[in-house]
Amino acid sequence: MGRVTTLTPVSYAHEHDAMPHHTHRDLRGGGARAAVFGISDGLVTNVSLVLGVAGASPGGAIVRLAGVAGLIAGSFSMASGEYISMTAQRELMERELEVERRSLHRSPEGEAAELRAMYVDRGIDPSVATEMANEVMQDPELALETHAREELGISTQNLGSPWQAAAASFVTFAIGAFIPLAPWLFTSGTAAIVLSVVLGAVASLAVGVVLARFTERPAVVSALRQLAVTAIAAAVTFGIGRAIGAGAG
Image (cartoon, rainbow, N blue to C red; front, top):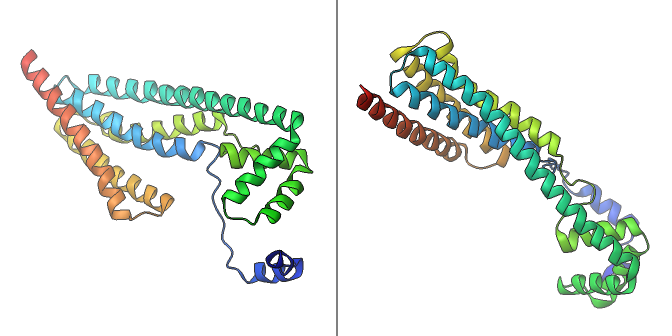
């Protein structure tokens, strides 16, 4: 108990003021994750589609049609997939929260003992753990939030937004998919293929760098990884398209 009584509100405030302050980005809504996957998937998908069709030399109009179709279909597919998965995830978490809410209402003593046991397992002194659990159980909303975090690893305050995830996925996929398609709106043939490759490579490196800044990982590694994934997918589909086109001829 000595450890607790020495940490008075005044001394804690002074210690807190002396601590370095930092902030965290809220990633729980689902939009950030959807945006990251969206732009990467859009770029890889459409650079592969555009170059795969171009490899068969069908003419610029066909490549443009395929690229636009890929952009639209992919954007809607990604958005609907994110919406459905996030909705299902949210409904599952809401169900688990309701189970926990009923349990707190029906057996508060048992839930308090469970919370105390979790604190003790983490190395907190049993008497301190008892005080902490009893304090938490005084407030039903705090009790629910604490049990949800400790038992389920979720927050009652933010279960994720399906609409946010869907919108972010739709927009970023479309942006990524438009990049390799853009040259075909103004030119065709070898020039368009070269421009698609160059733009795809530059965009891949840029996406990798952005992801590195977002995740605080080495930028070179992230950029080269994204470039390698895009290049492999584009090379394989272009080769297949070229082989099919030559066979059809």
